[in-house]
Length: 270
Image (cartoon, rainbow, N blue to C red; front, side, top):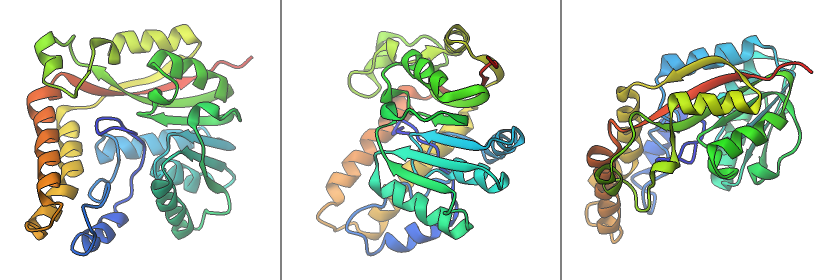
């Protein structure tokens, strides 16, 4: 969750100050320094997800495509007996997750593992996967494979992009290169896929536009704050071009067309 528009789960405001201090000395912008969550989500919605995930009292938790795994950490912190694994291939974000778990005093039962998500086979009572269907292929592929990882009677919190409306060819042309209409689904169609796989939907929610705008603004803030502090840096032109291009994809491309959904799904008992 990942989402440049791909998304990985992760919230942790304590890292913002560290990132801010690094911006004047780092040889380029930091990554995700202004983002509390590396997915578009309001703080109230995130807190509700934590509460609802913890309420099921999972004994085992796995987060596929965890990023720095703030959701994983917060749920594990509220369920003292739970053991948790965060799975990702991004070594830098995994190190951030390990530091966060150590700071919370839960590193003895929250493990971050460098691993390809599609290769993980150990099931759990609670499975998290936010913005990471690409690890499996399509959203349908992801839901089918994730179903196998959820213990009977367990839960999956699944996050993925959705179309707010079917995009036109002009819409697609303004987005990232090679974006196709098949890349995401309308919300009802995504839920239908989850049900066809075998899940039952416990909560279906789509974000508001303000949540996307906050996410994109904070994602770009890493570059913009660094550019303000380093206008003459040899990398400044490259960073400025990347920021302007991404902003164009957002404001003239996906804004209002691309949404994001969170599905809380239950697997029936056998």
